[in-house]
Image 1 (cartoon, rainbow, N blue to C red):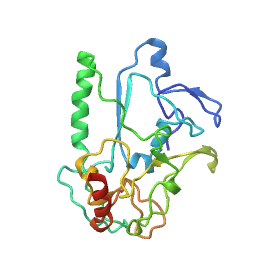
Image 2 (image 1 turned 135 degrees about the vertical axis):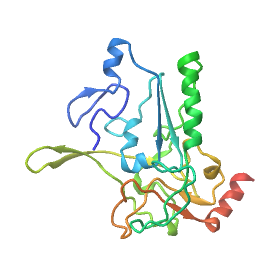
Image 3 (image 1 turned 30 degrees about the vertical axis):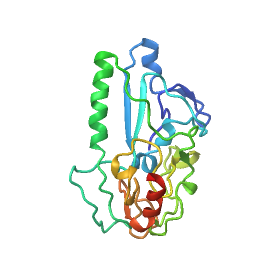
Length: 235
């Protein structure tokens, strides 16, 4: 479980009473690096990623000029280059084969140019509250029956340690808002997502459907669902 501070700017945390930020100490010594953070969609469902772009109360915050954030839309936490959609006995849905390596390769080049030549990298492409591309888990998806979405995610809780740790508070979390085809509208959308024949998610449910499957993700093939949406999107 991650702990405050969750993000780069210095913020106040009303739950712990602390004031901190990931870059607080390097700001004091003027030694902060240039930062690119790239997340998959899994990080929102399983690793509290919305707290990178909100304060502990869930309100939007701005990133420093030396930080860029990117979401590899529709991607899982990691995949082999030749991954294919497969069934996993522990998961309710087929496993998502989407590969984010083209995004990583492009960002590595941009980072090198930024550090060595001072060439500004692309602006952040990440879901945000102000852009309307983050949503509460309950309203993240349209009605897609085959998806079986029930709004489950890994919660961000503050615990009090002791012989029996107990939850004393919870930070609000948001997740990427999906369009009509079930794919997130924000982030870096590779062709597989920009012109989809399926819904690609960063989450999956256990085979019984009772809880999120750890580090799992899903794909729901849906030409019948997507075809009409594609016609409208691409003219």
